[in-house]
Image (cartoon, rainbow, N blue to C red; front, side, top):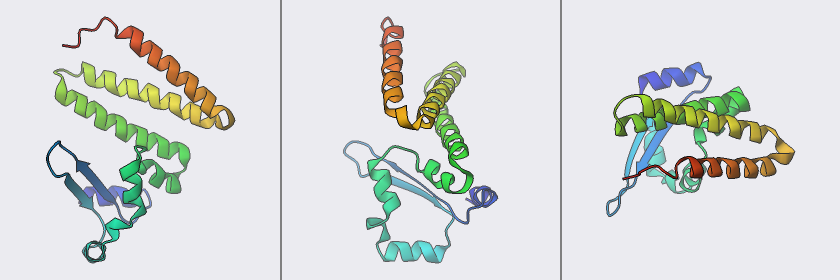
Length: 156
């Protein structure tokens, strides 16, 4: 938590909150929180029931766009925020893949794939007026490539 607080201040922010909710079938969700907010604020937040009306919590319950991207965009601009969020997401996904498969090959492949994907998405987002059309065509082409390139893979 101390290191994260230092890194956050280096980026020009005062506080941070990192929360993860893990859901497993037939079990209550497990929530893990690392907070850089003062303890007095954390207590007040809990006592006043702010979680029920917190727009950030509501956003995270209904969206998959990394909130880190939106938060950084306020401080470092769209392109840098996108790069930070894409890099963080790619690192988490490649680390997860590394825990599933032996060797580093699959981890690097996952990171490289997501780097290409996020790069394409960034270009589509920058198109503004034709973003929907470009996104639809890109999505179609990526799906077609994945379908045909994995048709002979033995998944068992």
